[in-house]
Length: 299
Image (cartoon, rainbow, N blue to C red; front, side, top):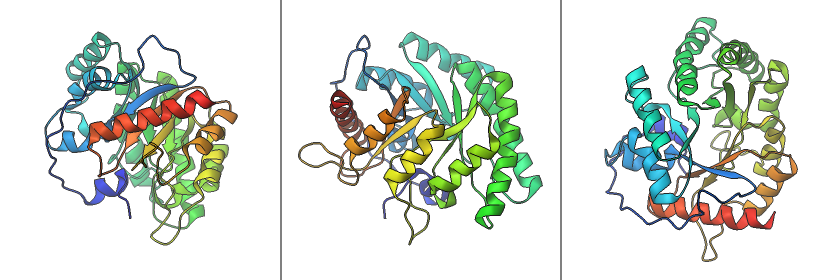
């Protein structure tokens, strides 16, 4: 079973190998693709955990090594959320012509906990990330709808916390978006049901092409799931693991997935999130970008 970010955060302590620098083969900043490509920081988690780079290096690396001018941060790689640190990160991104798109927030409490005290504390702990996103010029924070209980009870808990967090986010003009990120949240019908009940303009989804495993024995249909989640999408995650000799992703049909995205009317950022092991992180990022460029050109 392939390891995703959620599973890694729960189980892994990983020592990373050195990551070589690669020359960019990507499109110029001046080009105007049908979709804008961003880089998910998790694509470089080995380098980050291995202390080969820091969060402050991320915007520079995205622009200079990969020719990608949008970045999606992961909260666990931040040193802190103080004004001094955020100001330094903002300056670096601006100096490199990089747009800060969103922050993926993990380990800040279960927003779908059926214990009201637990989820309310989780909502409060997410406030600083809404503030940080606003400071950096992001449009969104990505959160998780995680909890224990029946699907109905967890859904009701998620509606409660997402409504409260969306109210806070609206004051800062920040979207609160939920990723299909394992467990019941990988059920597209379940997650879109929550969106319908929250019914806030700044609450939406972040469909991830790869995260549709509900349990060890159950996997949701990824194409149906992406189609369902695109109705509320405020971001899209182009997950990848491996590629064949023609450069196509071996576990999913990118042409089919991107057609679903296009047909939904979505025109925002598509992030590159490489999680494979056969290629190095830089090689995997560039392979994913090359594939997305190829697929987007056909749409």
